[in-house]
Image (cartoon, rainbow, N blue to C red; front, side, top):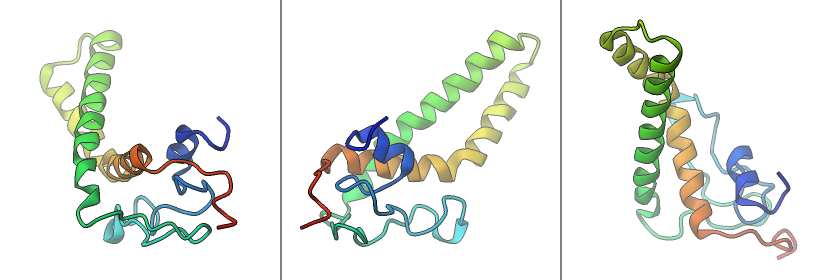
Length: 126
């Protein structure tokens, strides 16, 4: 994974344009500020919110990530632990959803931003 790819920006949660500045305001699990995006990049000064309500579209990405989490936990339970009851599986899905919710929320925002903001190698100099 090299700098310049969208996957680099997503996995490192960096600015989609310069891929050096931080994207989120604080830690992912700082529940008081969960999912807060910075106003602008501290390196290339890109404004992250392109228009009011820009990150509402991230709800669709979050939904897809939630479905992927559900399918992964459910398939893993059925594949490796076939003796688990349906209620145990529901409990595991609920547990992982609650524990990973702040991470999935932040991840959905950086993925959504990467749909619309593209890497520019010379972004730091401008």
